[in-house]
Length: 122
Image (cartoon, rainbow, N blue to C red; front, side, top):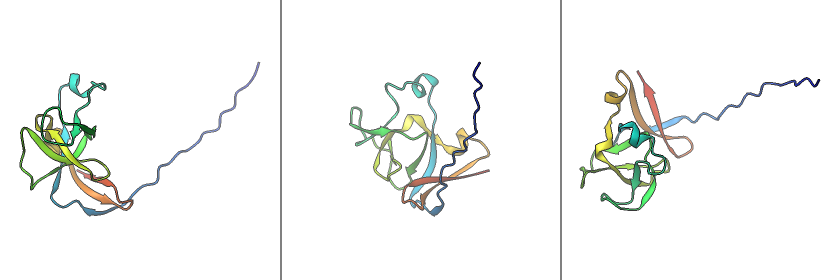
């Protein structure tokens, strides 16, 4: 009989520090029926243009920054991906962060690695 000895391995991700808030954006959250949220073949998209059928840049983030100075257009709101590439998300799936996560706060930030991040609180 063989005895298997396992040594625990601790894996830690480098934590990035927030540098400054992303001006002109607020945190929102995706809020859609489970049938939409769990459809991995057709995720809620971040699209190149505010119109149905526009090419997808990437799936929308679950927590996403939404532009405060760009009006909703054709049922889409302007957002961005983690590399700050702007695109458009269907507004019907986007709700204020505090409404989806009562008692909690979120602010989009530029992180020390130059990417988008978020600062959460309560």
